[in-house]
Figure 1: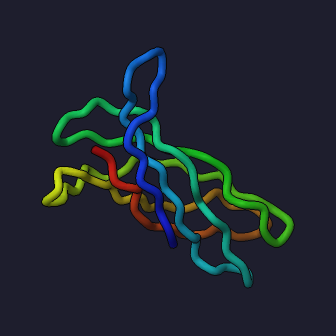
Figure 2: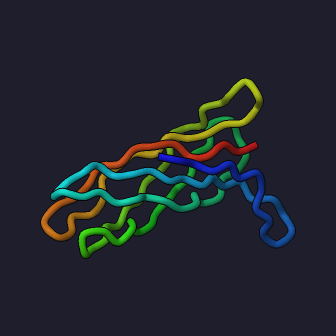
Length: 107
């Protein structure tokens, strides 16, 4: 598993609060997939969450869809924070996968 730090994205001249994420699914039917992307924007409030959705990597001849809402922010001593993601992919090719991980930090 790996993550990325993303400080700011500009949209229409404003900073937008988003996080990148990347994690592996469980191994089911002899393979796993990567779940990765960028969360939806959120307001910079203490208890905010982000929505996320996407398609896994193409492995073993197929993909799965995933979507969810992050957990609340987990603040660090340096003022940054991250969020937990977890869920289950869609049922494709006779199976589904579980995933869990963390977003990258944001300021």
